[in-house]
Length: 203
Image (cartoon, rainbow, N blue to C red; front, side, top):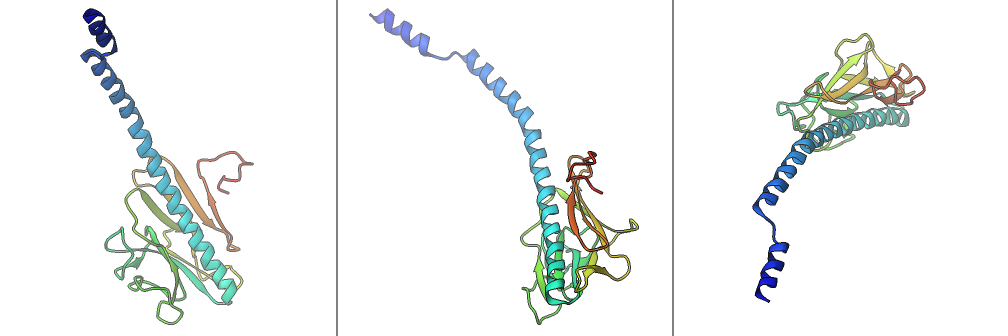
């Protein structure tokens, strides 16, 4: 009886070699999964940043038509790139944005107000962590940080912001683009898509 019990226990046990093999396999799987997971997070950051910018531009255009008043969308950067505060300046590489009646530089921290300059309507919320790089351009390809929509929802004044590229800071991985047409239409597209009939393709 004693021999049978000890044999049964031995059969149910796990040897040191089995544990070592299991840990090795787990370590290998983790080393393969972590880079993919990091890439997924960075691509998600690019997507969320591009979505937020697109919605901000659409809000500026909608408010301009609704109020029959010129409304501006401005890309801004602060001293602390993660935060939107009163150190903000208009910047073609700003990851934050402000929709306002007046130019918002040095006055971004206040709550939305119809009276207090710069009469902010909406602004990007929360903190911006590392991962997404923003580059605004006008129609000629020069850096641009702002666009003003008139009461008809059309861009006005000089060469306004016409394209915003959002990519990973490293330059690798996914990138997205937000465009504003000469009529004021805002569109989010994927520069990597080449199929002419794919609605995600950049025109």
